[in-house]
Length: 413
Ligand code: ADP
Image (cartoon, rainbow, N blue to C red; front, side, top):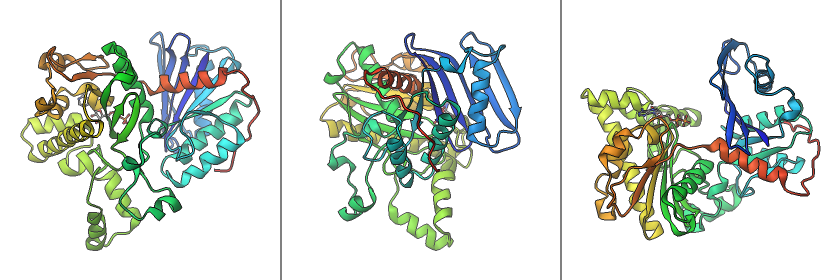
């Protein structure tokens, strides 16, 4: 089956056309700077052919139209006809408590996704825009929503309830949801394969360290706790997000700096994290370079980052009552030997021993085990592949017997 996987952000659309039988991407690309005059479409075909186009792309629908035309183009395309796209799989950030797995998009599902906008006003509207655009551009092609929150939906209540009046959970759905679910799912399954053990027999901590960072405690294949919360702001230090913070700090800053809700939101989401502490950059590569050159604040940002990862590994080992494997993934997790080493430092008491030689060479989408042969806990690096999970889920749902194919009308955004 050929599945078009779409991930729509505020000003970008990332896409992959995946052949699910071969588990292979036929084409990969993204449209960035949507809404600006100089939008860019970058497209790469499986045989290495690459093209970059620049122009005015005003909204997500126009962006997806461009994506479809490049997929069909004579010179750079991989399709002869739109009808060759068997289904579309959409990444949807927030599924609230309603969605515990991927679903075929029907009018009712669309309405429920719209209701989840309240929980994720920064993310879900863009996802909805992408779905609406595809309903217009590919009417009758089945579409599936795959939620970032779904893998965490089996967390026990003691892990997701916050220490605030319970009525606020009932009234507004304020609780931990967790994100990056497809990534935590993929790397935990893949780690079990690499270790040659059933996922049901393993207690794992998965560390998704990219621009956004989160960790999950995956016990017997189920996410039982995760570091992001009601929104992706909680937990680890991130590129520009603060992560864990005494909530009173926010109130204090708002008072002292005389700022309102929206400025406070920007401060915590865009000016904090690695960028805020280091004053250098939100990009871990720059922070590492500056730290090496002796920049105190860059070193501090790196130390805080790794200390939190280490603290969560310990916390999750306690939460699960043991630890068999730690998995690193995403931009930093896949490429930074320094972060992996510093995050595992001092964890020998838990049975974690890295093989520094193996750790050092594990970069650029390589996959493997980096712990020493006598380490009780296996440490692995696994490049994440959220698009493959979305494509396979989509194919599975669409090919289920009895799936009602109907033309779904777009919904107001
Ligand atoms: P996103 O969350 O946007 O998908 P990525 O998973 O691509 O982000 O991760 C981006 C992060 O990965 C950036 O902080 C970047 O600095 C970091 N990164 C990429 N390559 C390296 C590297 N070689 N060393 C350290 N950090 C790296």
